[in-house]
Length: 230
Image (cartoon, rainbow, N blue to C red; front, side, top):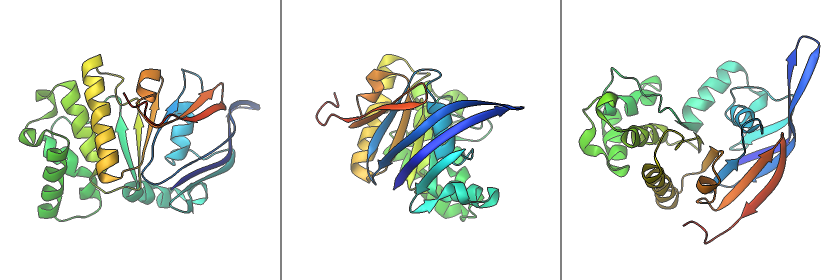
């Protein structure tokens, strides 16, 4: 599903180079739910951007669905992201003048899917994430937790191979955080969706079955703890 192979990255500023990631290597299998854990400055945001095809690595390879994405052109990457990758953001990134349903439908608009099918898929996913009755409201009429549920539904509407969640509970209180992680676990188990959850919170990371931990640009731990989901 996802293979990160001997990945290194350096940022260049004029003639100077600053190393950010050092020989990162791991695999994520289809249907896994993995946390990428690290504090600020650990390199996790850079690694996320590389895995999502938003940046090109200095060295190494990123393979998603048997395709090395670092070899793709910008146009190929844009198309690949539209069809193979879903995103969940800390700040939800919902469009305020669109309804909840229209926000979920938006990725399908870019794919040219007909309106009737777009609506059916959006409503089905909104029901799955528990806010089907909010479909015709606007984001400003929802709580933070409800907005994140919309973001989750939108991330799944194209049936992506993998979903990257970037600090998905960062703007939420403790109770709502638990509800959102519970929902992601349920979607992972019932729909067999592959999730990579980027977080700096150990409490969030330990709700997943496997944690990949970065520190100062190095992979320092790749651990599983089945049965520790609570």
